[in-house]
Image (cartoon, rainbow, N blue to C red; front, top):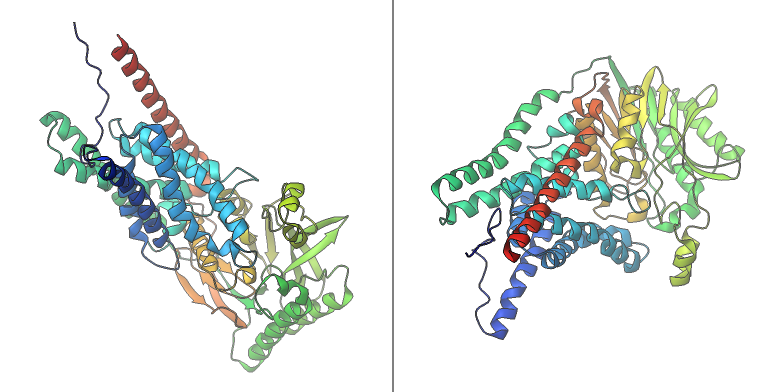
Length: 536
């Protein structure tokens, strides 16, 4: 008796045949690699500062096409090429001042995670309703990438490219994992729906079931996003606050700007004094408090009386508390600190940045890095230390949650300010190191997603721009230019309710990881059973 091995699903029959001659075969084998790279670039183009969020859908549709039915080795290579196409242009800002070495090394490492995701997507691509399993595998990859190595690097999460998209309300439902899952699922579902339209070799019953799954993969995310709009609002729940954001600017862009740290402090004080004068003349409303950016005082105001005098003078002139970004050395530890400076009492509260940036604020593998390039070790002469607890300042009776710069990319670092009572969020940042690159716009988009995720006003005070006010529904209502001194004043709503995303925390992400693990287990088990049947 002859036994024929079958799989849950058959490989895509629409791919080019390898029948032509050697040269033609090699050229045809390059088609999936080229398509994978192109899809990666397409995904990059969907990210800010462009508003082409919808390009993520054809990017994942194409990625599904190149991966479906592939063996693990081919999927690994195709996934890596996709990762390079996406991350090389997305992260080019990391080499603005330090050269291409660190940028290329970072991309080479991060693309490995996407390569492994490619293997997982290929593995589950033979399962029924495979877009669901495949989208969960992508989110599982993001979950790992956000945690390792060196406490993770979540830059490039799919959710962060959707600040202008129709799927954004899903951030309030389940945070960045659910938002990203919906986008990836819709992309894979579009490919599957198109494939089933073209392909007619299945039985009618199987085709109907598969078509229903494909259509649901597209329809459910869209309908879910429309339904989640009910979770998004910008009405005040606990009154309002008038807030001022100060952007002092820097003497020049680049890493050397910190050598002129007194000038940076003076610039922010000068812009605050200008605000105070405009308040006195009636040109600007008086704020309840003022927010300065990260590194607005790289001179330790606790150790340098002249810096303390400058900050204190600015606070007295404007007559309200100021949150100041300072570099502080305490008990032998170097801290990136936010200091709440009262016009009468002086410094009253502090928050130490917890998620510090590897290779920027501390140097992992210092000996190895120094052996490769001593200039890199000189850029980070002393490592910053991590803070211990969440930052929530009481500013004129308003609870302001603080997530300093890089921390905005991490789900937990923003969420726990809200769970500790924040009625609004501030993301003080310093992007001067990255000149006029896309980095500041990518980070601004993260803050817009966070605003919707937790239904909070988000302010973004930046040393050199772009500083902004973001409403709880993700809209930017005011923003500055880049490398210009400016201040913004606005009345913003204060909110106390919690979205499902805030309440659920890590649970949606863990649920999707479990879905991914279940799909991979099913795919591996099916493959093993198929091989045993074939051997029999």
